[in-house]
Length: 385
Image (cartoon, rainbow, N blue to C red; front, side):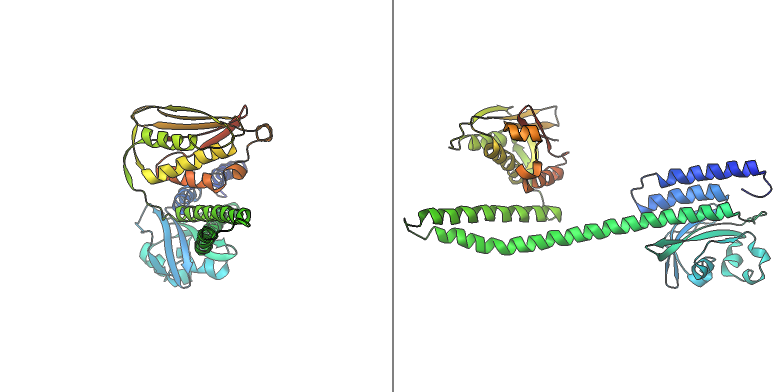
């Protein structure tokens, strides 16, 4: 883009440049380095320059976050005095700076960058994050710009710098949210930990009270404290998993026997629901897993099956190998018509249990638990490698 071109040619160039920037702004970047690299590559093409840099300004220091150079190697992470860079003018003015021919400026001929690198042309824009200066986006070359920098080019580099700033702001907010969530998990863990001892004491003390007159009340206290204690244990498990404190004790186990034993245990429960159980367990399946954690998964799922299946309902438990390296576990149970018609409320029925299950399965390199309701039947399944 320069004034020697016709208006039509300049308009076409502007359109193509806008398309390039539009593609950048609609691309999902996973990290800052990937984003910087893409913006620098596009910027070098748009402005026909040899060096592209994204910097971070810390007081009087100029840090090279990333650099693409076709004439001289400049390492990322290198720190220069801000006063020794062309970008000092950008910081002072808080605006886009374009220098088409540095050698024609008397005051710039003694500049360290000009003396050492003979950079003749330079264009830069400030990068702001939450209205605070982060650094600069700048492009330069040893060749002067005969026709200078157009207003369109100044607008383009400002757009690119704004987009980088927006990405950084979003990244900062996500990091702040993650830290806030992490603090909340630790706080919940501390509270749950402190509640565990008094609840255990209450539950234990009820066993020492021998009174027929208050037997029903004592049983209510015991049952309530037991449920509250179970809830506290669940919170502690969830907090520990969320903070990465859970370590697996991996070993080879007869997975078929583990699953079948837990199914038989819940099947043997004496209750007034008269549930119909159907077990389909393929024998001889061995798997590398943490035995205690997988039993925790089975107990969560099977407990929900027996707890939420209505009177006379059907519970089906299946374990089978899909190939030499995959195992599939499926559980299904009938649900009442109200649940089926209104849609299955996972949080209401499963709660923290699902989060614990998925954390354990994730640690075992599984894609996690899949849930759905169809034809008055609740299905849960997962695969392990």
